[in-house]
Amino acid sequence: MSAVARIKSSLLINLSAVIVVWVLISMLGALLFLVWIVRSAAEQQVALEGDVIGAVATAAVIDPLLTNDFPTIQSRLQALVETHPDIVFCQLDSRMPTSVGAEVSVGERDALAKWIEGDLEGFVVFFTPVEIQDPQPIQLAEIAVGFSREHIDSSTGSQIIWIAIGLGLSFLFVSTSLVYVLNRVIGRPLKSLDAQAARLAGGNLSSPIRVDSQTEFGHLAETMELMRVRVSEQIQSLQGLSEELTQSSDSQRMLFRELDHRVRNNLAGLASLITLSQQNCSGIDDFAESIRGRVHAMSVVHSMLSQEHWDPIDLSSMIRLLVPPGAKGTLEMEQNPAVLVPPQQATACGMVFQELMANSLKYGAWSDGGVVHVLWSSPEVEEDGARRLSIYWRESGGPTLSGEVSPGTGTGLIEGFVTHELGGSIEFRYEPDGVRHQIQLRFFSEKPRA
Image (cartoon, rainbow, N blue to C red; front, side):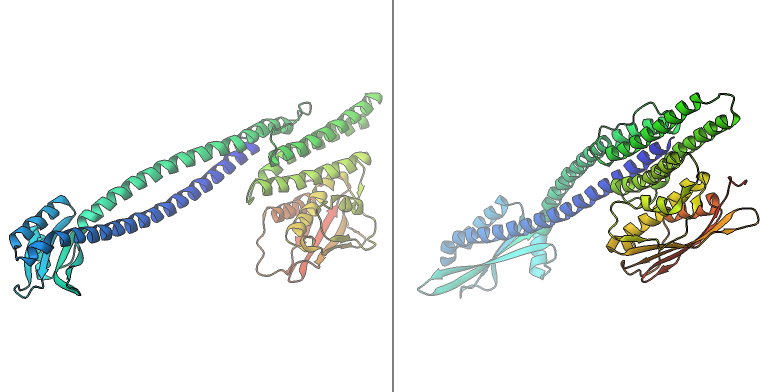
C-alpha cells in the first residue's frame, strides 16, 4: 500500500467515525427531547381528559343526586367508565345531609379496593366538585375519576418505541449518506493523487499531476506539479548539457549519475513527507498546509543548487528564501559570516530551517508579529576536515509560552535531519518569552560514511 493510500484510509476512517458519532449524539439528543415532549403531552392529555370526564360526570349526576336516585347515578358512571378504557374507577362522594361518605363507586374491583384503602400507587386521580347555584354555589358532592398509570405509560411507551425506530432509521440513512458523500469528496481525489504520487515516486516525470478538485487536494496537486516541472526542466537542461560534452568523460558521467541519484532521492523523500505529514494532522487543511511548506522548502533548495550547478550554496540566502509569505514578523541575521552548505547536505539543512519557521509561524514569534534572530559564528574545522557550525535560533515579541511543550512531527523531523543527515545535535529550549534553540551542524566536503 502506497503512502497516499494509507493517508486515504486513515482520513476516511477517522472522518467517517467523527461524522457517525456526531450524528448519533444528535439523534440521541433529539430522542431524549422527543421523549420529554411525549411524556409532557401525555400528562397534559390525561389532565384534559380528567377535566372533561369530570365535567361530563358532574352534568350526568346532578339531577339524580338531587332526588337521591343513586341507581341512576351508578349506571351513568358505569357507562362513563366503560366508554373510556383508561379509567379504572369512578367514585361519587356525596355532601348531601342525608348521605355519609362515598355513595357510588364503580370500576375495577381491585382498583376500587386500593383506592378505598388509600393506596394511590399506580393511579392518576382527578377530583371534580358537583355544585349548583342557589344563588351561591353549593357543593352537593365530589367525583373522583381514577386513571391507570400503567395504561398511560403503556401508550406513551408505544409512541416512544415508534419514535426511536424512526430516529434509528433516520440515523442509518443520514450516516450512510454522509459517509458516501465524504468518500466522493475526499476518497476520489485521494485515489487520483495516490496513483499520480506513485508514478512520481517511481521517477516518472513525463505525466502531469492533476486532481479535478477545488479543495486543498487540488492545491496540493498544483504544488507537486510545480515541483515535477522544475525537476523535469533541470533534468532536461542537464541532459542536454551532458550530451554536448564528451561521452567518454568520467567526470561528466559521474555528475549525471549524482544528479539522477539526488533527484530520485528528492522524489522518494517527497513520498515519505506525504506519509509523515499526515501524522498529528487535525484535518485536510492542516495536512495540506504542512506538506505544502515542506515541498516548498525542497523546491527552494533544489532551485538554488541548480543555479549554482550543484556547488555549495550560501546559508544566509537559503534561509531568507525559505521565509514563508505568511510570516507576520521579521527575520534578523546580524552580520553573520558567510557559510557555504555542501550540496549533499543542503536539502536536510533547508528542511530543518523550514520546520523551525513553520513552528514559529504557528506557535511562536511570527504568529504575533515578533522577531526571529538567527546567529552563528565562523565554523570550526575539525580533525576529519568537517566544519562545525553553532547556530542560535532565538524568538522574541511573540506569545508567552506556558506549560510543557509536546514535540510533534516537525520536531521529530528536525531531530532526524540534524542527527543523521547533518551529523550534529540540537537543544530545544522553550522559555516563557520565546524559544532559545541551539543547533550544532557538521558540514562535510563529501557525504560521511555510515
